[in-house]
Length: 392
Image (tube, rainbow, N blue to C red):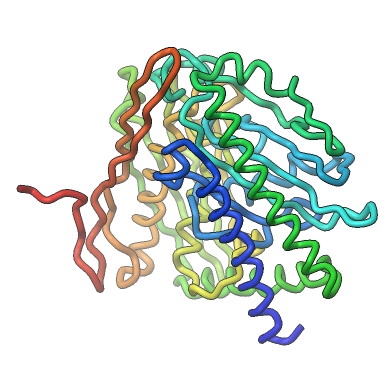
């Protein structure tokens, strides 16, 4: 493909993801998805590598780009299969984020995947909204390991039985899951239409090479050197703290080493992160340094090398509570990385923003209300900071 054809392919894939998102939002019935827009849609190649994503929720898409391959490989996929999961330690983020995946199969050949991830207002657990101050993952809600919801066109309802029995509004959950499936169906149809024009595998491979070049150019534009920064979470909600996030950023040519050695060990409270969430936070920052026309594939992140100690707050071991790591710790990771990059690119990097997320959650045994309040935006070179509400 020449440059024009490559650009057209990237834009078409982006448009497919955008269409998937529109279908999901218009089809879902929960305010959490329909009004808050807490969902993401993406396309993957046959190996589970991200090839396109819409501008939805960064932590969703970055984590899928990091972890999708380990979930979908070594599975015997068939047409109209639907896989569903939310396990934070197997490609997920935190339990309320449920991922639905459909393979794109033609004549027995696996071409790629369409996926949607959406934050469900409740997935069971001890607290309404599944975002309480708990010490174990199992107390936060139902853990859904990757498994088939639909297999060869036949619904496997048993895979959802425990989830539906423990969720506080099972009818709403099923409606939203069906909306996610509808979004994936749209992505599947569009990819099959692209395949009919010319084979997708070769075009995806070329797109990946172009994407990687954008990523390497972005890293190469940062002056070589070592930049260190640290910040803290005040506590984990259970009185343990302060909790450090320590970063050593090394830039060498078009490669970057993002080393979080020295960060606090995983803690009792729910501010721990799975490795996928930490990776997503890093990916988001570097993606912001790239031009708007950068193809949205996983290859843009190939120049980035993460070092995160297992058992730390940023790479918690299985079973740790992680509900707040996805919404709180991820934002502080972003601010820490921006703080390091500000030493190298002072004219491009903004000051730290709010660095936290304001969630209001309440409910009963049968219903849940979940709302997010916006936070302040930092001052930057070409614009002043903003606060979400008037002081009056």
